[in-house]
Picture (tube, one colour):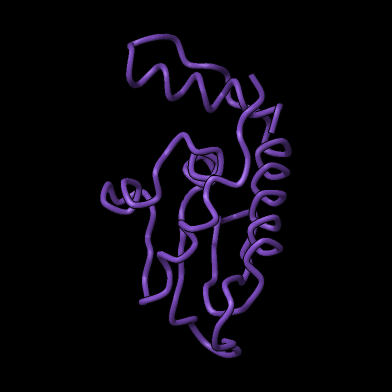
Length: 124
């Protein structure tokens, strides 16, 4: 997360205050942060009732409940890597992200992942 923290904060500050945007981390750094945080969510909320997708890097199943085995899962949360990292660090609220259309949450249980967010805080 340290490798992406300046980028996340810079993007956030740049939009809100007109400041400069930090350089985007490498694809490998973004992928590592996305995978680590998604897998941490899956460990914190074990189960198979919600699938969290952050293409092109990871998809995990989490949240206790009915197991999904074939076809499209009934409960899916999907977003881009940057938005995911903003969510897991607490820089973006889950419900606000859904309302803004930057997170797709389909199914009656998809919103339950908000109970486990944020997963981590950015280093100061």
